Every structure is written in C-alpha cells, then in structure tokens.
Image 1 (cartoon, rainbow, N blue to C red):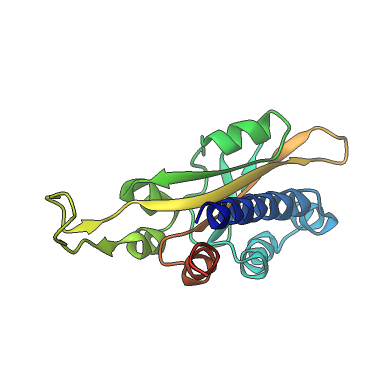
Image 2: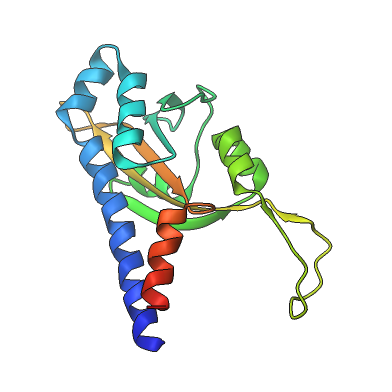
Length: 178
C-alpha cells in the first residue's frame, strides 16, 4: 500500500500544479487583458471555469475586492485567503484548505449545498453529535494579473471543491486500491 500512497501523493501534486498553471496562464492571457479593458469579463470568467473545470473563477482588483466572477458574486467584497495574499506578493499560489459552510456560502450557495455529506453511524466510528458534515475541501489557486505597464492590476483566484467530486475520488481510489 505504501507504493500506492506515494503514487497518490504524486498525483495530488500534479493536480495542484495543473490548477496553479491554469490560473497563472489565464492571469497572464491576452484574452483576460482584452476583457478587462472592454466588456465580456463575466462571460470569459464563466467560460474559463467550464474549460478548466473550476467551481469558481474571480477577478480581484489591486485592493483585493471582487470585480467579477464566474457566478453570482458579492462585488466589492474583499478576498483575503492565503493564496490571494501570495498573489498580491507577485507569485502564483495553490493550496488545499477546508472551508466551513459559512465560508463556502460566501463563495457560492451551491458549493455550501454540495459540501453536505450525511454522517452515518457505524460500529467502529467515534460518536459524533452531528448528522452531517458541512465543511468542504477546496483546491484553490491565485495568480497576479499585471497591466501593460507591468504593475499589479489585480489577482485571478479560482477553485474546485473535492467534496462529491467523483472523478477525483475515483482516481485516487484506483491508485490506492488497484
């Protein structure tokens, strides 16, 4: 099993790196620069979410406020996640984090709903007063967006939730239990 766990860890590293590359590539794209200068930004963010299989994509201004997103977003609200802080320091960043139901709801009510997992008591499980798990595990990435002058113009942040992500879960399962 240890060899399979090493392989699963390597797969996870590849997934994280691919997410980081996708966000950084989009942040540096001429397509994003054109949309930021004109209109169609929300459509571009939505299309990028679909193409890259992200649950959300957002553009933040140079102050960290949400300018546009791939879904319904609270425009003007500041995002202060560690990956976003790294992007404001000039480097792409990707991480896996656990978000509470409230945090997921701020990203998207649909994510908060999708995170819910019923807890079923089993003979060997520790007692738990909860009837469901409501937190969600996200892979999220952020990268700086530079203007034509090379100065920081904003940050692109995107993420994918792993809860109920059957393709991801099946792949890890196939690696660990061949």
